[in-house]
Length: 226
Image 1 (cartoon, rainbow, N blue to C red):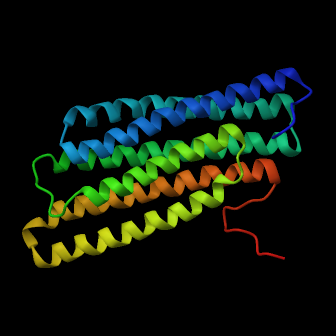
Image 2 (image 1 turned 90 degrees about the vertical axis):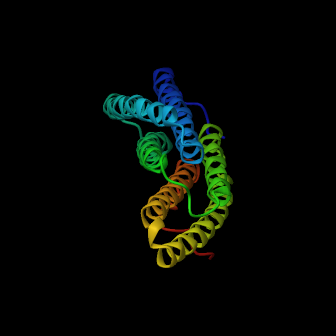
């Protein structure tokens, strides 16, 4: 657990930034869930809701980024304090990109509204549930400074990657054997790829926590055992 800061105003600034991350995180989790559900149910109202949330997420991103820069300028933090603010900057960037992927999924859901799926959607739903769990765990790790979550999410990300590869092979096989489903299969390929990218962003968020607490940058892999 990180020690409390001696400067109360800095603590106030950090708390405000953490709250912004939590708020953005809740919004993009909802976006992602609704986007995937729109693919499964062909409910165009969900697509509209995802697009509406996109504007809110983008506004929070801009406001939080500005607040981070202002805090650095006013407080001139060093060491762990600076790492925490940098982690917030990285985290809100990843959350904004998750929102972008949710928007892409929702728009593909709108395309799929008049088409039948060439494959069963249960494994896409399984993959999405794994990724949604990763998002929740990553945000929880951010709030609690839980460094153990990064390794757990790296393992879960491997599982997501495996599901992605299986689904892409199956969809490409459908495209080669059934030309009439090419458009639908291609839309689902984009959906699967977006879901996988959301998992990558969740893993990134957990890795930023390790950098804050331990000063270790995991973005290019775990350090070799010495």
